[in-house]
Length: 602
Image 1 (cartoon, one colour):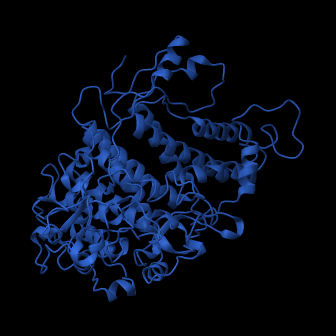
Image 2 (cartoon, rainbow, N blue to C red):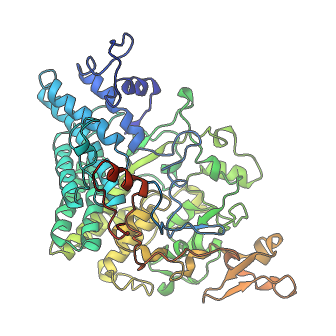
Image 3 (cartoon, rainbow, N blue to C red):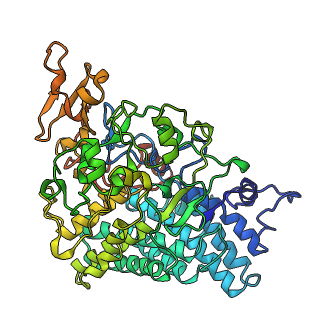
């Protein structure tokens, strides 16, 4: 499904958004709140603005906030040159949630209910209520995932109704029960097909599989409430089943082409995507900032690199039968690891990635990669803010991974056990995707199928996680690298300790580099390498033999770990605090805004 953003439509939708006060004099050239709610087309115009709110894709122009890759550089997958990004460790002076979208959606739902019940057919009435409830559920899920308890509003609040404007935080479970009902309604009522450019029931179901699974995980691992976990997991499974059983989607493309196509229309790998088009001046810059000619200061961690299984047997490197599985040279990794490794990274180490020496090319068309690697320029379409590659917003692969993880979690709560057919229709379907010709030419092979009867015995497995869930989570990490999910996954699993640089030294080093052979000109003060046994060797310009020792995982000597953020009093890295100013504003009006749980309440 294509999201085609038309700025004229968005402008019109904003002109009668219902979120601003209107002049007494009726507008002559655009709709206002009194005249707008007269047709289904007008509702569609109003709802169009939510697409840019929720389906960021690659962003627009140089605005990469929330965009794939550039918007997700805070996780255990990404290494920064120098100082690593820290978790919040103190209450900010000013910070609070935004309810602009919630108010806007509530206006839409209010007007449909109160002004359009006799204008719309029953089917259209329920469809548009479903669209509104879907977007409201999306936003509340974001708020709850960030803050925990948040004020809940299901209707418009007057700007003089202080009791509601300054209401106390609604308990998370109450908010999420309302979200659950909104999602159920949307699943039952949004149209199966509302046109190629618009949200339909399959899109809703795909996102429900994500949102409900996420809440199920928070309930199981963070809040320790198995009954509520089961409730949301069951909704996630129902939604994912709906998408899978439709037969509308499949895994048919080689991995990188999903992220580098100029037109994803009709691609069965993609449930929802954002289309970019130079003709209407809708472009982005994600390719430009990773076009192999530009330098970047973040790259993959050694931790991420080590997580890719060997293709020959699907085993982790520590116990694979693959010859030289312990060889982390780039040529070896490309030929002997899961095919998604080759699809995600350049085939030569380069200082253009200053953090890791391993350049991310997952979002770069292979033709451009070849041109730049041969000494050419990327071209105007892949420079500046001129990129027009389409962005996959919701992939079928994610729904498959949501389904298998959810079923495994439900099995741990007394549900039906996962069987081999479940693995075959999800993880093994991903491993069996087509390979690009360029990948095959470099020796890449499809990864061996995962077998329940022969699950890997990973010596690095978190002992609190079953072998099956460990491999499901690993598959998710390989499949969704540099997309939106990794930090969210660590939070919902209550596993932020994976980002502790004191516990995991592999977060401070990047790719394996043989400096004397591959990049001898880069042997200089400031570099060090980490051997496979963890020994750090720092280049010493005064030692003539030091250069020969510079082979290992590259680590910039001034890379600094994160400040402690776990098990500290009055710090909760899982949920964000609100600001002191906002707490004082409540108090000045005679109301109480409690601080987020885990943070000091005064």
